[in-house]
Figure 1: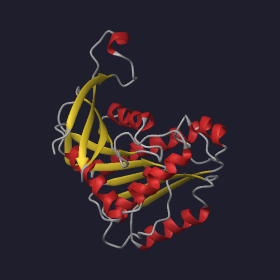
Figure 2: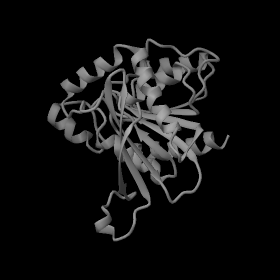
Figure 3: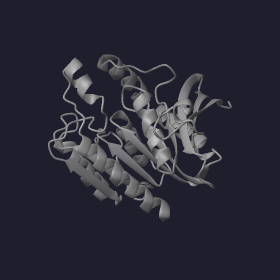
Length: 267
């Protein structure tokens, strides 16, 4: 089924056209697409001032669902010169700000790995087919739940240049196998992340070494889960969750990601 597209304009700073008085360079599209009878909503962002095709990056949301934070990351990537698609792993309308509902959404999405892979590959296909994208240069980055998703896609041998996990779960029933993983892997985790304990970190390092995967892992001392999301502190207070935003870790992990993409896409 062909995606239904709603085109809007936005600036890299998120300002309206009326407030700037100039034509925005960033383009965004909300895309609806269907997989096995279920409708999903994605969000594309790219800078149409840039000429020619450029690498594409998939953004996989936290366990809250395809929300504003995921779309903001797509716009940041567009401002950095990429075309980004914030994809949807749950289905249209499945977005929440309550952890109990998020847990249910996540459990439903992760109960079938074939289903997860199909949803990821459909979004990858949509991104690769966009007119601004060089379909041979694709990466994926994910946050929390999304970090686990992109790592599992790498483990499954999905054709990606690289994946980046931010405060994502590092353990998995799927194990990377030598010669199967095509992506280079970059992981950012918090040293005080109670949801990603040190045994998961050590386990991932051994797994990737055994599979001969190009892995870079950065652990930020004293940093908690969800350190990239400025809204984490509010959630922590409201629901007594061991999470928190850390500006330095968020900045350093983004800078490291940009350097990673520059390197892998230049190869």
